[in-house]
Amino acid sequence: MKESNPATEPIGQNLIKLISNLCFSVFVFSVLIITVIAITYQPPDPWLESAPALTKLFTESENATFKNDNSILKTGEDLLAPAVPPASEDRITEAVIEKSEANIINSTPPQLNCEDLERVNCSDPRALIAVERFNLRLFKSIVFLEYQTPVNGSKPDECDVLWRFRNKKEKSWRKYRDFRRFKLGFGVNCTYKVVHARGWHSGINARRPRRISNSTRGAKIAPSVRDEQINDTIPSLGSDMNFRKGKYLYYSRGGDYCKGMNQYQWSFLCGLGEAMYLNRTFVMDLSVCLAGSYTPSNKDEEGKDFRYYFDFEHLKESASIVEEVEFLRDWKKWDRSHKRKVPVKKVASHKITPMQLKKEKSTVIWRQFDGAEPENYWYRVCEGQAAKYVQRPWHALWKSKRLMNIVTEISGRMDWDFDAVHVVRGEKAQNKDLWPHLDYDTSPDMLLEKVKRMVQPWRNLYIATNEPFYNYFDKLRSQYKVHLLDDYKELWSNTSEWYNETRILNDGRPVEFDGYMRVEVDTEVLYRAKTRVETFYNLTGDCKDGINTC
Ligand SMILES: *[C@@H]1O[C@H](CO)[C@@H](O)[C@H](O)[C@H]1NC(C)=O
Ligand SMILES: *[C@@H]1O[C@H](CO)[C@@H](O)[C@H](O)[C@H]1NC(C)=O
Ligand SMILES: *[C@@H]1O[C@H](CO)[C@@H](O)[C@H](O)[C@H]1NC(C)=O
Ligand SMILES: *[C@@H]1O[C@H](CO)[C@@H](O)[C@H](O)[C@H]1NC(C)=O
Ligand SMILES: *[C@@H]1O[C@H](CO)[C@@H](O)[C@H](O)[C@H]1NC(C)=O
Ligand SMILES: *[C@@H]1O[C@H](CO)[C@@H](O)[C@H](O)[C@H]1NC(C)=O
Ligand SMILES: *[C@@H]1O[C@H](CO)[C@@H](O)[C@H](O)[C@H]1NC(C)=O
Ligand SMILES: *[C@@H]1O[C@H](CO)[C@@H](O)[C@H](O)[C@H]1NC(C)=O
Ligand SMILES: *[C@@H]1O[C@H](CO)[C@@H](O)[C@H](O)[C@H]1NC(C)=O
Ligand SMILES: *[C@@H]1O[C@H](CO)[C@@H](O)[C@H](O)[C@H]1NC(C)=O
Image 1 (cartoon, rainbow, N blue to C red):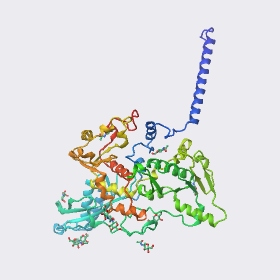
Image 2 (image 1 turned 180 degrees about the horizontal axis):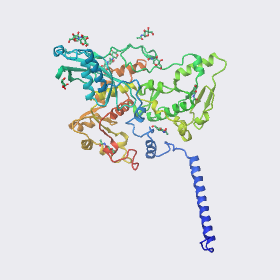
Image 3 (image 1 turned 30 degrees about the vertical axis):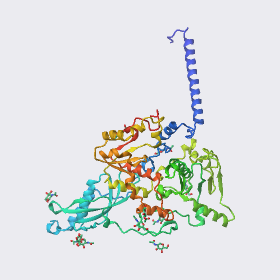
Image 4 (image 1 turned 60 degrees about the horizontal axis):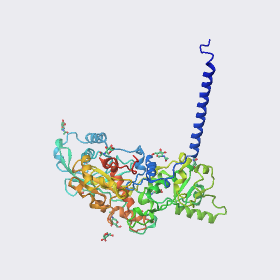
């Protein structure tokens, strides 16, 4: 039985019909709009964007590396979740120490005789246990991995001890070593105790006589002591057949060459990501061009070795790569000695997507990047639809272990007990339009005033900065033990390990410690600080990417 008024019924029904039709049209229309947007949407081209929008775009995702701020450089070890330490890793913890202590007590007369212990015996396991406990208490940010049996120091009650460790703040889980000199005494119950410990790398007697290695790439300089944990020799393909069996992705140099190093990373990882997506070996040019903004001469400098900046050993382990010179030689050799040439697919434009190349069977896919800028940037390959398929393998790109040794040494000399302030100046401080207060907020007086509110007086204060004037921070010295990168010059001087090791990569010629290396070291020391004061957010109200971007 109908209760509604028959006269109004058609109107009501019509109305409902009308409304639902309208709703449906709106729905269809919006679906259409969204589809059109989805189809035509291309991530904006950074070089066509205004500077603030550009930097915003790239800073929103952590993968962004074009940040206008070239005083910091993030790589895989800073961006990603910590690598899982190998299962075989044995950390020396209190429990481990107790266990080895129990073993000693079981194997020796339980009642310790104090007369036995009147002299310090460095090879006595109980001496090592005292040192292990001491280190564990003192260095909370370090994971201790293995100790060598202590050896005599320079005096009868001194022992030199060497150990390997990892830094808990370093996500790459690389190992480093330290050796220190300890003065030992005896505590209650005739146990060993540490009376005094000297600083970073002080236990020189414990330093292992290191492997004298033949240099790589036929350099003709005298063999020297090296970090035996670095193996960044260039892998060779071996036989002809190995070459022919492989599948390669080869990128010719594009417009990225000699651009900033942030763009280098962004582009390189795009190429490597495409190679991984295509399940191919990436042909890699180890020769890098350093942009003028990082060189003392302010001119672009070619012929820098990738291995000065990045960890080639780790890259070899995480991705399939072949070095360009080796690759081209093997390719030529094959073509000369065989009737059938190596099949090559040449790709002229980035507009041919990685997805279109998925089925390609040729041995070599050769992307040529012949166009004009910005069409010839490597990273354009990973734009648009391709971004959904090609992942940049950030985990493959770590900083050079040789530079990390410097980082570890700087942090170690401060006993891992320091705070840091990151002071961005440079071009940004001069650009009053985009950063109106930055220059004032990072002026010496303001710095002191602001840092005082965040860092306790007389702490070790490391300043990571792109301010070139060394004495700029002198005001802070009235309250803090100030450390600047240039205080550690001897770590890359001509008497340093770094100098010796990089020279080997450069056919025996000395390598300059350039601006890009400085940025890498500054970044990593900054990340190891206990309290970290950032320019943006902590020192100034200006936005990181320019006015009105935050
Ligand atoms: C950015 O990096 C994260 C991991 O840090 C990754 O999951 C994501 O896919 C990356 N995005 C792009 C567009 O590369
Ligand atoms: C020192 O300790 C080691 C190991 O316990 C022992 O073999 C050695 O005889 C000791 N040396 C001295 C001089 O007591
Ligand atoms: C270490 O010093 C002790 C005396 O302090 C001495 O007996 C021992 O032989 C020394 N060991 C080495 C390896 O020189
Ligand atoms: C010394 O030994 C006694 C008895 O064995 C024990 O109760 C005490 O805790 C020990 N002291 C220390 C500091 O180890
Ligand atoms: C260095 O190379 C030469 C020949 O290439 C070899 O005879 C020598 O054993 C090598 N030395 C080391 C320490 O590897
Ligand atoms: C260094 O790594 C290469 C592989 O990239 C390997 O063939 C070589 O044996 C390694 N050398 C050493 C000394 O570990
Ligand atoms: C990648 O290539 C290798 C050899 O070229 C092949 O064994 C492997 O199955 C390929 N993997 C995928 C996922 O296509
Ligand atoms: C190192 O450099 C200094 C000056 O910078 C020079 O006097 C010295 O001879 C150099 N030493 C070596 C081993 O090259
Ligand atoms: C560097 O190499 C020279 C000889 O090539 C050697 O005398 C010096 O001890 C080495 N320096 C370091 C710190 O390894
Ligand atoms: C810096 O600013 C951030 C964001 O406001 C804050 O979380 C952090 O605690 C500040 N750092 C210091 C050292 O005060």
